[in-house]
Length: 217
View 1: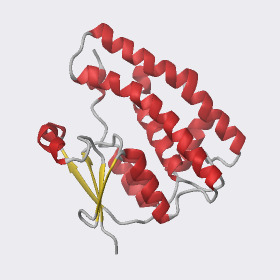
View 2 (view 1 turned 30 degrees about the vertical axis):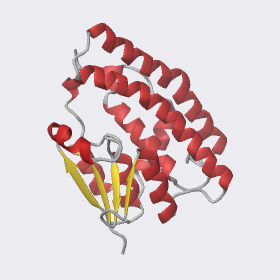
View 3 (view 1 turned 135 degrees about the horizontal axis):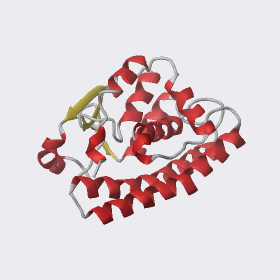
View 4 (view 1 turned 90 degrees about the vertical axis):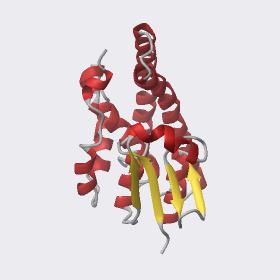
């Protein structure tokens, strides 16, 4: 049996959706975590100086990058669409979500590194504007067009876990954001999080969010 070790901080972050997908697929894995305070020591040991990292059979394959990990595990365990066209759609929408994440991370880093308040507010507004004016409308249109409740095709794929994870993280901060999430995106989030085999992980997930006052300034 293949041995998987998923290496990430002891938070949901970018690994949360991968954990959910593996549980749904009933794929055993070691969830190896570290505290954020350990990052300066951990960082030089990772391939690109970032996490998550997936280790396959210890170091037979050392795979960095969130989307690469999703795609690899999905291809190995049946969570990709059947056609190349639908696989390409998954890639396209995942890259679109990453466009939002690249803006969000500027805000997060600005808070963590105590940048000037005006810079923090600027990054927050830019990320929320992209989310509300670009990403949410585009995801909503795709869900309407596909018509199955899933992002692509008629079964859950890795993209569904990736999108639902990002939406769930946003919902956690919704009180601070004060914005609305379109109904079909909320329905999709609920559909993914209602899949069998996720109950234990979802309970754990509640404990792996940062404290809400972390981003109050």
